[in-house]
Image (cartoon, rainbow, N blue to C red; front, side, top):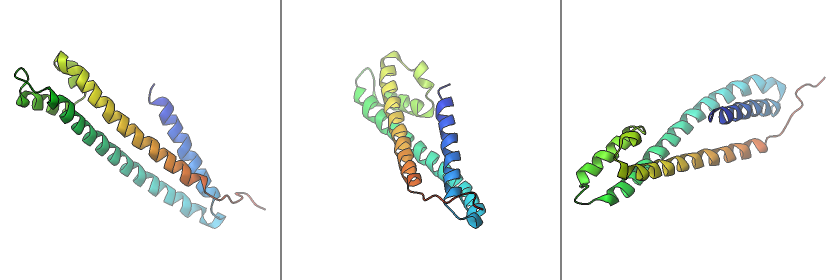
Length: 143
């Protein structure tokens, strides 16, 4: 359910963008505009997902190192904490089986990594909306 609304919103935005681009070019260029929009949309999605994945991965790593390694003690040696970090980076499911004392720390790390990733997605949305808002419209059906 949590992906339904953003997925629907994205599909609506993609359709609106395509219609805006078609309406922004003369009739003889509409076919080329449509194919170019599909090419750039797929390229943009690939690059966007790659950048978002990189942001998530790097921010999670830095949060884990900063927050988990600060727990170094005789009871929790550095080698043990590095093992916890490695397991947390492999899978978010590790939170369910992690030691109780580190679960809140891991949740905080994932929280910030997701926050930074969603911030990137929101900024990308704002930039895309800005780009679409400056398109000039041609009449689609003229006699």
